[in-house]
Image (cartoon, rainbow, N blue to C red; front, side, top):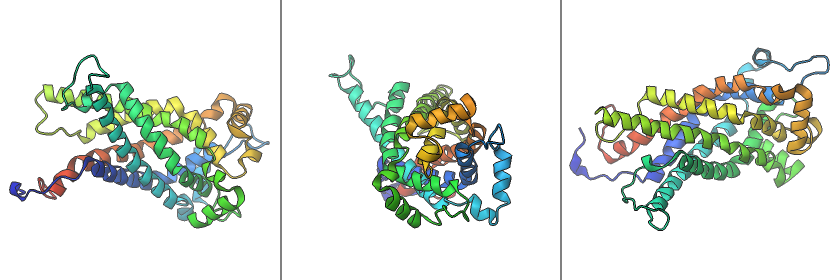
Length: 330
């Protein structure tokens, strides 16, 4: 047992959110990277003139596995993906938490509400709309910050490593994008990425209220002891439900964004969002906008589980370990 007299202070909530998000984003991207490559290839592949359909999951997977260096091919672009994921989730959860606290303070202010609220208000008082707003603010800020990383990642994983167009590493990729397209190149697809923030916002508009409802029922049943912690099984169930609904709702934007961020996008896929969307429609109809959805869902669930389970556990245990309230291994 830890000595309660040692008086170590807990880290600030901002530090906890940042570390929890950093840990979750890093592990999730390490787990799901090979499937991310397959999903991106499916999104940017066009149907060949001699075929009425585009390559499927197994076709792309076998092509990658049979390449000259299969392991290197399946993990090309890993560094920008891990860096981008770590920065994204760290920033996202931190900004989201601060926005939620701001909304709680706003609601507690009699000038903004018809009834006064105690300063000890909890997150349970936030509505699904509030969670949507906080996740949207966090998502917009994070996406604008990390879009250059995602551009490099998309181009690194959309070409085979031995292709003449392939970026061998991030440094070369950054140099080539800047030389050929200037700063504008790093923000290609940003508009669609900002639209896609709605997926994350919708995910948390579903996840957080269900989580709060679950914890409230635990309290009512007398199962919660001390500060509440979401168990692993509940985390998996709630995160799966919220992510699948959000993914299906906004998936078409991801296909358009991947094409916009690809090399020579204007020539290969059409100019701008409307050009790419029109090309997709002519190419495969409505199915074109959902190309790779099965792979995306398959790839998304393991990384979603890792993200939420790691985040919830780090967020709960980190302040206790750092303050000495709990010892490692307890």
